[in-house]
Image 1 (cartoon, helix red, strand yellow):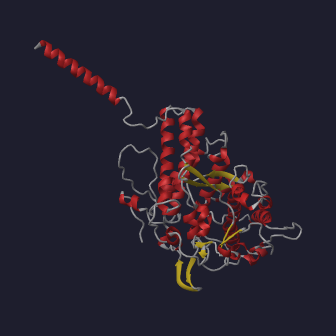
Image 2 (tube, rainbow, N blue to C red):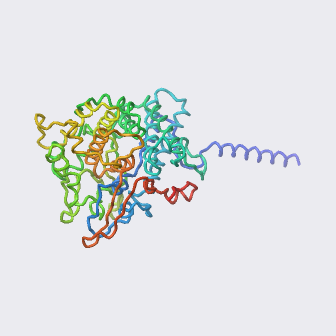
Image 3 (cartoon, rainbow, N blue to C red):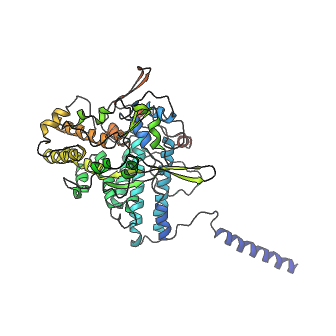
Length: 494
């Protein structure tokens, strides 16, 4: 009996010891983020691996019916401001998931930094993680919520703001209000700005100092904090030499242009990404920049000096029915040499000095520094105008007011505009529309200024459908993707 008891005790002791060993091991094959090097590697994934450009651009007034046959259901649904039903590349569901995956990576990095004692040596990684988290949440709330309005933000549905890594298998998230989301973004920007650095081997693939300031200016422009925009952009001055050089861009061979546009060597490019995307191929879609409508954006008549723009729709396809400003280089990574199967990645510019400078000009308009705004806007137009003559091509307030007349009820942000401000804001919005054609930035202005958009669909040259996105249209906030709503995320009202 004594021997039996001893044997049982040994079995129990071995079992307990084995159990302790088992519990002390990681239950799966996940990598432990426990060194500075691993944290830095993780932060490479803290940027969305998908792009919003196809969604945003197709919903905007930069896109028309080219009369080509329907070739892409996502393209047609976005054009009609319908909820997309697909989940592939360049879809709403894809960008939603990719953004939250990026946020998860940022949160994991921040937790790992905290577990390592939050040393000052990891401040650059901490700054990048905070800015990346703020950026992805900002993009999500910009698409899936009503436009920011301080009068309604506390009750408007925003998106879930996630600040911790998921620790459970199934987590049910509630939507924060738009105000809460904006408050969280601002906290992350303010904290992250303390630590961001340029100390990367290639800083333009990370949230470097200038990229962080440019993103902050975009955020504060939406929030209406003009002084913050001016503060963050002060180093640009009123005549920055870091804007895109269109003379140099137009001088390269057409095939090289898409590569040049997103190159990190371009002074204007502040944050560059290569998301999994086929957006470059959109030129074959029906609802795109139509050849017979391109002059409405890039024609000589739209130039305040009456000259040609240096920004050109140099690529013509389908007999000129569709045109393209050659901005996007697609890199196809072959994963199987035998079958030729692979993954497409498209070079995209997420933040640039061009946008940064326009934000600065707008802030000067809104603080009634019209003379300074006029000087800066003339400089900006000069860098985009062919054969610009500084002696004769002068911008004046009278010219701006005449070229961009106030139309009652056209631009209706949540704040009040004087008639002069309204003309300048319209001029800046049109400049932004032109500069970032194909890049989706126009949609944010449509939403921010509550602009009306009309999308016509034609058959045999006759309009068969006239679809109007009216002011405060509920479709301006995208519907929550099905997988997210099935997991308990409240849908947007329709």
